[in-house]
Length: 221
Image (cartoon, rainbow, N blue to C red; front, side, top):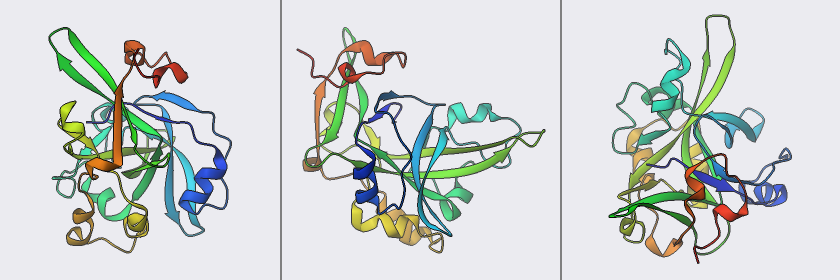
């Protein structure tokens, strides 16, 4: 799964990388956790836009928002058939920018967190889905999930799953709302090549989302 990530690149880099006209001021975040607001790139009638979405997808048919705590990730293998995700998979796909993410390696002395980041460049683009939901009083929540797949050989030393990381040449196909055929979309949901990621152990400070500063990504001495 992917339960924590970080984003610390400047706005102009986001604009250039994703072809955006405007990016709001974003403070660097080093320990983004579920239920928090995360930036996402959507294909809208006005072109590509960055919007803030709550992490944890709430299906349009949900009775309450608590389901979002169980839907922070969608498995690539079943995303087109699971009721919580299948409609969004066909109609509401997004990119979620990240400088890197965290996974925990189980060991005899507990779980050791690792920071996983690009081996080249400074950005990942996670494949995501988004949804619109309203409660009984009409209050609207826009939410999202991150797709996950099997880990590549590099990450498998730490964990057996990883986020789906899309390459720039596939951004357009993933975002295009006119593309709805799983036979076209699902082949995009493969593990990123092992040589595109690097990793290092970090402090257990990252275990708590209360800690959100550059020390979260610092290599463990």
